[in-house]
Length: 136
Image (cartoon, rainbow, N blue to C red; front, top):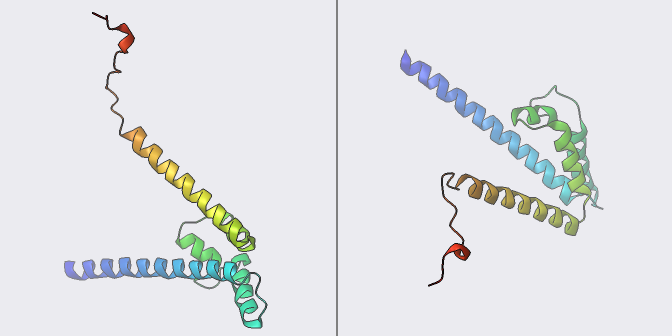
């Protein structure tokens, strides 16, 4: 009996993980299609852009991997993500890379701030300045 319960729990975890992986993949593909085909001139590429655009702006929740359901599954704020995806898609390559670089720099700064603020020794004594040491 315990073995059956453990198998069901493992299957549930695997299923949830697989759904999240698939949802993340759908979101990533939409992001790539929006950016790559934003200024597309061929009919096929333009259709790929429009499919991704319609998916992002849709408020339909009737199918499992709709934009809103993907956001819910991945614990993302739909309106913020929607705005970010559509803004990134409209940027030119230089602006897009500059924006990504800015985000990376902020993340790097936060990372180092956390390292140095948590690694300080709260009971450390400040050294005595050398100006107070008598000269012989």
